[in-house]
Image (cartoon, rainbow, N blue to C red; front, side):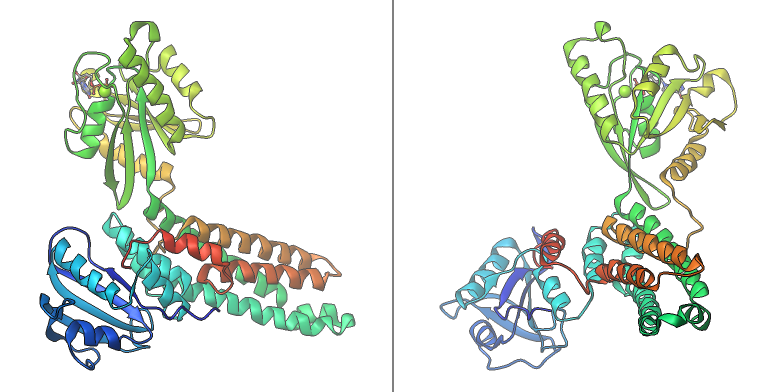
Length: 455
Ligand SMILES: Nc1nc2c(ncn2[C@@H]2O[C@H](COP(=O)(O)OP(=O)(O)O)[C@@H](O)[C@H]2O)c(=O)[nH]1
Ligand SMILES: [Mg+2]
């Protein structure tokens, strides 16, 4: 692991704008020039709030606040850290940062404090990512799952798997030196049982990570259908707010309206679109709106195709369904059941779920919400999700593929132990990438550049 750069970095750690307090944070190997220059003191006691003036170049006070000093390694970054808690105004904080730069500090890059924490082994890569995910979490459930990863639960499970793989590899490598004992090896190490157990553990973690990925990223849902079937009314009902204009005039919605809603902690990004109809009937604005409808549909994870319950699925609706990408998840919503007095209900026709409801009265909306969660792949029964990223899910999938391959090799009468050992090794390196044991520099750059400045 490379040694972290020793230069002193500085950034405003609090959100931009005005606030009760604002925090400027410095990190580096020796902060005494800043303690002297900014606070006029030779040293600060670690981990104690010290009330002080923050001094400008001429010795006049820029602000009056609290200084907190953390001596390495007991700090967020593992280096010496100085936090200046001042008044939360943009000009005040910019003045303090400016003074720090005059004293020789450099402006921190996004995520640089956390990157240093990672390089100094204060947290592993999955935990560092959880820091950013916790800050970005849009729902309470996502925040809880991020906290679980940040506290190291996810990393611990992954590490335990890596340890088990290493153990089995050691056994295998030792046997490889005595080629006649292959079969005894399998018996002695209970290798088949061990591989089966590893496969089950990876599958369990993968399931929890998949759910966490859904929590983190949510689902893009597009409302699509013919004019006047009630798409905008349905959006308003789901959002519990009047976000889209509703009228009895066909062609009211011109531009796509986006709204984030939350169901059981999952963020759904719902897009209401212009109704799809014969282009000859539409004016130019509506034609452009219809083009946007198809663009939005192409980018979504799931389509809610809305139809009029009394009319049923018309030829126009069939055409819309046929034009959706073949692999796109879809639900058909039969709206306006209040007019026909049919009860709200869910029906499955083949692989497609149909929900009969009324956007006007709200009857059947709860059925639609649970159908949406089901289409999204949400399993409320999976406990303790880890707020995982695509990267983690892919690594877990790779590990599970290699463990399965290892299991198949063992199934043969004369197993090829070299290949078996190789599969175990590949599974191990896939898992190690999650916690960052073997992580290329460009991946680190990519991960930390997405952080906010000051974290
Ligand atoms: N009776 C009844 N009318 C509805 C319902 N949903 C929407 N509407 C009416 O249908 C018309 C078109 O609704 P709108 O949401 O603008 O449809 P869109 O063109 O698909 O977005 C409006 O007059 C709505 O009040 C419903 O569930 N029941
Ligand atoms: Mg509309």
